[in-house]
Length: 337
Image (cartoon, rainbow, N blue to C red; front, top):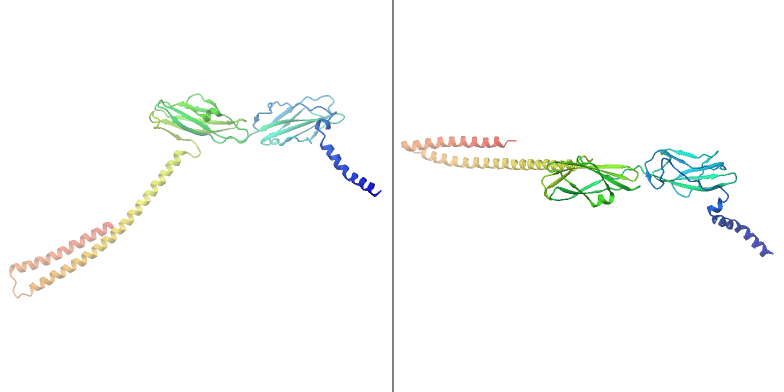
């Protein structure tokens, strides 16, 4: 008896789990059997569910059978959801604003109900991309002797992907390039002696675009002597190069000024040392000459020639001292800061 009671209690506890397992195995067809068929969703604004669009108002419609009493519809960003927003009485069109849609893949789900029950769920994708591709990179990678240049274009788009490039060169008609052709390179011919503007626009699958431009001019028709310079870009290569060169020039001028100042200071010091040394040498020579003059002057009687020699020495010493002092003052004045 106790065994039977235990078995009955265990069956009572396990029966909800068996019921849940059975429910989980029910397919949507079985669950909604006897209900309306899933509607076919159409759109006048976004007719192709596989195409990417920019955000904006979107309209949907479907045929409404006579026995439909209500519908449910919702927009989600994941697939396989059940609509929770009911519409009574049933409507055959719905409109949404750009704010109702998210960037990426959206899913519109619609479900019909008749007098008995809800029917199968229809799902429709709406792909939205509002982000422009990256700025195109223009690579002028090859020239030939006839003035031709090979232009390679690259860009990226994380959401819808790149669609194509448009290339405008000078006053010529713009040309559409698919992504593969732009990556391989497109051959253009330069006009002799004339610069040309190369304008590139990259488009993604939703029609968003980004631009870049390049100014190209030939210096001669040799592969090594045709120059291309970036222009009209937020970070211009030419402006960057000029800024770098000006910075180098300014730094060089500061270096030369400091070097000149150090050399001038050293020259002033050397001049002062030379001046002091000359004064000492001149003083020693003068004292020696004065001793000789005094020795001669002690004679009781000087001849006329000796007297003239003494006077000449005194005069020469005075003139030499004056000239030496004047030259030293001139040099000091020239080197003064």
